[in-house]
Image (tube, rainbow, N blue to C red):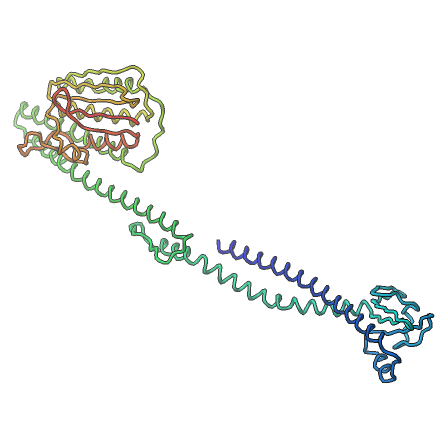
Length: 432
C-alpha cells in the first residue's frame, strides 16, 4: 500500500513537473521573443527621429559584440549607413517586423520609413533562439532542484499516511491467541478507525465464543463426572454381587447408567453442533407435517416404553424453509422433552397449523408443567428444575430446551412456553 501510494505521488509529481516545466519553457520562449522584437522596434524608432549619426554613435553601433545590424537608406534606395558590412543582409527593407533568409542564415528584422530615409534593424534568429532557450532553461531550473525535495516529501507523507496501519498491524502481530482485548482507537484517522472498530467487534465476538466454549467444556466435564462415577460404582457392585439375582439387578442398573451416559454424550454433541458460529445451514422447502410424522415414528418405541400415548393433529402441506437434519433434531428434542417430563403412561399431543400465515408446531404434555417464573431459565444449559420441591434432581441433562432454542434461532424460528390444555406444558415453535 505504501509503495503504491509513493509511486502514485511520484508519478503525479513527475507529471505536474513536466507540465509546469513545458508550460514555463514555452511561455518564457514566447516572452523572450516578444522582448527581442520590442528591442528591434525601439532601436529602429529611436534612429528614425535622429538626423545625422555622429561618429561616436556610429562607432558604438559598429561594435562586433553587438548582435544588431543597423542599415539606413535614402528614400530613393541609396545606402547611406550600415553599422557594419554584412554580405548576408538584403539590399532592400521590408517594413515592420519580418523574418528573412539570406544565404542560408535567418534574420529577424524591423524596418521603419521616414520622409527622407528607411531604417532597418536586424538580428540573427539563431542568436535570438539561443538566448531565449537559455532564459527558458533558467526558468525551469528551480523545478529541477525542487523535484528531489518533493520526492522526499512524498516519501515522508506516504510513511506518515500508512503509519496508523503499521501500528495496528504491529499491535495485532505481537498478540498471542488468548489476547482478545480491544485494539486502541485513540488518535486514529477517520479512514483507519472503521477498520479497527471492525477488528475490535470481531475480537469481542471471538472472546464471547471462546468464553462460551470454555463454559461448555467446564459444564460438560462437570455433567459427565457424575454419570461416569455412577457407572464405576455400578460396575463394582456387579463384581461384588453375591448371587445371580444381585448380579442381574446390578447389570440392569449398569445398563440404565450406560444409557443415561450415552444420551448425555449425544446431547452434548448435539448442543455443540447447534451452537452459533458453526457452518451456515442450507435451507430448503419442507413439509412440516410430514417431517413431524417421521420424528414421531422414530420416537414411538421410547413412548411405548414409558407407556405414553402420541397423537398428531396436522394440516396438510404446511411448508417451511429449513434444513432437514436441524429441524428433525429440533422437533425430536421437543418431543423427547415432553415424553421424559410428562406423566408416565400419559399423553403427548403434537399439532401443526398455520396462524396468520406463520407455520406453527405445538407440543403439549400432561406433566407437571413449568411455572411462569422458571420458563426462561429452563433454556439455560444444564439447568434442571425439581417440580416436586424435595431437593432431588429431575431426570434429564438439562440440555434439551437449550439445544432446541439454538436450533430454532439458526432456522429463524422462535420457541415459547405456555400452559397446555392437557394440564402440563405447551411448547410452541413458530416460523417466520
